[in-house]
Image (cartoon, rainbow, N blue to C red; front, side, top):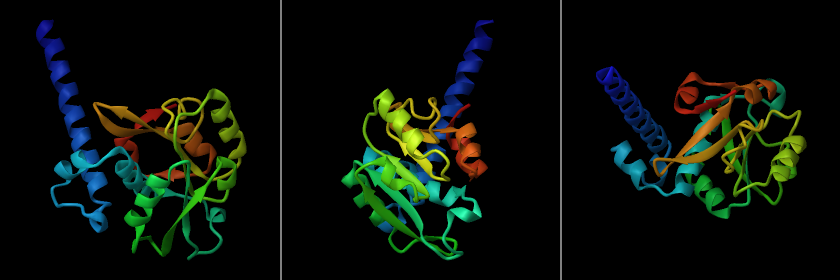
Length: 199
């Protein structure tokens, strides 16, 4: 029985190492224009939290599909909004510079409140949120097709689309599949495999 438990722990550690390595390559691949090296894992290890969040936000734009009525036209910009973090928005602008998703250029916008981001495709809300803040954000963005990502670790569990969290001193992300479906979004299996899934 002891050997079975040890085998199970070994498999779990192996899966975690593989997931971390996949995340590192996933992130580094989006940062070619901002100094990424070809050694994805080593490069991603050296990034700070804001750089990782900017890289993830860009990858969300690549691996999430929005309904047709979420776009003004077939070639209109894909808008990524940021609330409460000039550092992330500045890094995100550098990350998306010269890049596009299909025929859509990427546009980064700064907001003072989540309610201003109803017409964005992705909205990142930085900082810790109170229960009241989370409820207000969900209410303000209800009925939209915005992929909302918060810093607060309880955001996805409370009905938000996604949130960042720290695990093993690394930035990871969680996705609420029910919230994604309710917003009319389709998330690539490549992205879902790297996320902690919340029902």
